[in-house]
Image (cartoon, rainbow over all chains, first blue to last red; front, side, top):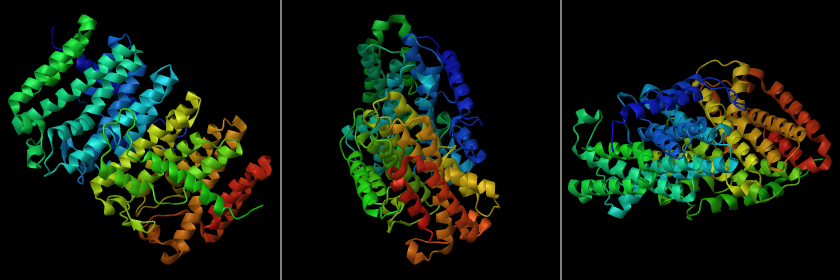
Length: 301
Length: 301
């Protein structure tokens, strides 16, 4: 059932990149007064230049499962990617995780300065809401509003930003398994869940399908985090291209630390089985999504 | 034509405060997983505790001019105030303007820490978009979307955040009058313009009225900035309750510096005349808005 999806994912990521490029051009939208060069450069540094574009590609593949593949899905995917990119810029700041490098390039505050990085993050976050609420996204205003509101909830104090707060508070503090799961469902899970759920919303999926794909998004979030924890524990710095063992060094408890690698792998396998079961009604049409779930799980092997 | 509007403005500000309070409560919205205590405390520190609430009160008074005064206007006003508050939190950061005090209280990064202040700002910004796109704001989904999109444009890279970028770049650099006017129309003008324009949109104002109130908002923005520059130049630290002469100390050019105090006062007077002329079709119904314009101008005397 699995095949090499990397060429397909690469092609989808390129489509996303093109949209991000055009949204970060110098043309003004109505109501905008000027786009400062330095701010634009910092935003482009943060948002362009490749990457797997996992979140928008998930959104696109889910929408395609229900027959939709158009500029609206791409725009919604770009909005979600802007949220992801802003979070990386702010998380990398000296006051937060203090990272100098990302994907082999200097982080925004290193390539520019801290003030510019703060503003670039703020501006990417704001641009995400401009884009997700724009007419091109969907013909139904009610759907556009729902996508906007749910994006805010997934990324704000009760989602991603709140998860980062819990994570910062986790240094040198004991966390229960339930607390770690909650933290991770907020910090990384909420946007991945949104990616899959919003793909179904964009394609006007029926409520049973919407629930199925929402749960699939939660599974992707869990698998992503577990695989990441395993990688952090086991990979060498060379394999990762960035510092590893960082969570342990910061005294942060991880699920792998609590459960052990063996039990973590078992949970990953169970999640994959659940994902296959969930998407079984769609037959071979769902094979790209299943392959993506396997791809995410496989990062840890 | 003028009267003491302070009691009325105070009452309106209290109504805004109550809505901000309730939006920053511990109750979860659908889709939110948890609201971290520390993050909520920082957001409440940033957004509650008084202030004139100039932007939402302007919005409310404009909506009232066209017969609307309901929970939707208050919610939209709260969203705008969250944007204003987030910008203060981030502007106060050490990497930006590096301010320790605001309104006689420690700034958020002083009362908490830098990471928490960054996240609190991010979360207030995100919450603003949750609120402005919510059903309570207006019965017409198209209006809610327009309010959302215009809020993003007024506060993002082509508006407020872009203006802050230009402002940071202004230190020890010569700026032309046109450049300073552009910077100020972005940094402070865009949100004040939005306040008045969105009040008219919320009340389903006709297009001629919408244009009139949009221009009134631009005038308020200009008058606010000119009065602020005069204050910064002339007031003693005691009168202001914060450091003054800060722009000059940072080597930032201001319009007052270029035009001189006398010409600045003349421009303020001309703006007030234009405001009165603009609102003359509404007769005495507009006297609160005119009084607010005078109030803003009078800050400099």
